[in-house]
Length: 412
Image 1 (cartoon, rainbow, N blue to C red):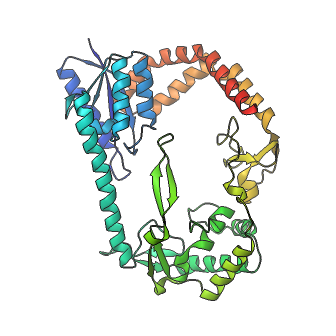
Image 2 (tube, rainbow, N blue to C red):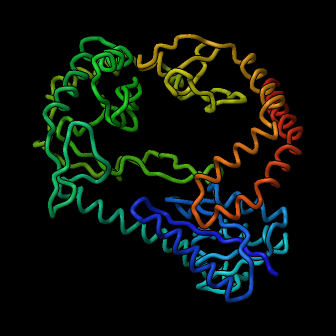
């Protein structure tokens, strides 16, 4: 009997979890009608189809290479990817593994579908982006919000979207930040004091110096937000997706493309105070590339080490040691201890080699993961969990050797 894997995805938080279940149910009905057996379901929740950097599709490709199934079924081709290059790569890899792609909308996928449907999906994304920008520009031209919520303001609910009013308590915090900076206090010291007093930050979490300082060129950060002086600047930045990582990267637009509107009713900071802050920022200019813009080398576990006390990230605090970033940049953590980076890397690799691949621990992982799976996937996952544990145990040497190789490449 032919083995089938189902892939389902929805792209927005505005959509319901039921969308995934509906897609799986329809695919299961089609598979049963054709006399096939569903062996696994792969899902990606609230994830864009413009990139393949998704855990569900990556796991599907990995299992396909292992020959776990012979057909991949999905509701439509755009559920797998909307990017023409990506969908062509998926078809190429699956065809090499002897696996067909079948969708409820298009049937069996061929190169013709990739060319026509892929182009249509790519044009749909571009057209959607243009329409969205057109709508946002219309709001900005009326002095309304063209982006996300800004600290110091409240959105006004009603028929006219994007209207804002000043939030008095938050506006007092904004004014305090400008006054203290103009008086000579550093952004780091301001952030420490706000966190010490329990003042909630823009995201509801602690304050950081980068939140206050930002980038003058890009207009980010409290001290560079021109809305606080009654000027709404839109389209300063554009965002493009890095094809290697799938993450959005900001790019500065030419000034002649910026949309600037005066909104005096939203002014929080007086012009004199604003100019005083700009003067102090200008006095700190140094020739050459700024420190934060320099490309610093990545280490073996860059971005992966977390503080055991607060859960914040660890970063390099000296040439050889790592420490809690929240303790040093925000003052929200009491953990001021540091650890030598090389010792930490050796300890982690040793732990991976000696403990992680213990069969009992691997079985525990499978049980916990099963609990988080949708009901439609649970029975299938339990059936293959033993094989997963066996494969993981067999891969122990490869994982450790790969990690060591990466470590040595950083040391060269």
